[in-house]
Length: 222
Image (cartoon, rainbow, N blue to C red; front, side, top):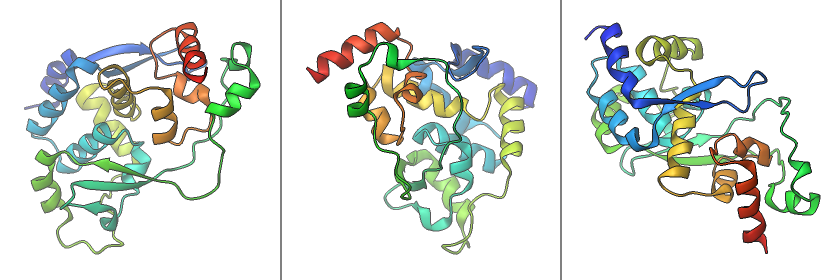
């Protein structure tokens, strides 16, 4: 199947959401929560480069950044437990114009914001069982310290754009949105699982209004 055909077929799985991290309030294309598993099945069946298929499935199944996936070494993959161990990378600080101090008291904000520690943080992610045969073949012969992937972040971005018309952040955003809307995960899980150091970072993944989420936080803290 040619890339154009793959692109056209894939568009039924996506929706657009506001990207609150963008200064210009751009839209970001993500997999619709109700089509999350369908999209994974779609990608698994595609005849595309194995490396891109593995990266995409690992990313949308764990919510990792592409850079975190590309840093994986053979020792970080446990095929028997179907699990990957991801070293959480520090995110560059950026300006965010959403002022949470306007609706959350400093004492409460401090309570729900984890401390910014310099320790190495690890996060465990599940490996889709249907990916195991391809992944086993891909890592065959690698030593524990060998990197699993050789492609660059730009190479992944180019493939994502060509195949599905998305950015390298889209699948991470898709996973988190799925966990929030389908698996009913809340602010505390998002903050702790992804080691977010600021509430405003977690906010971008919630479609609900700020007021609704603020009320929820106040009720849970009462």
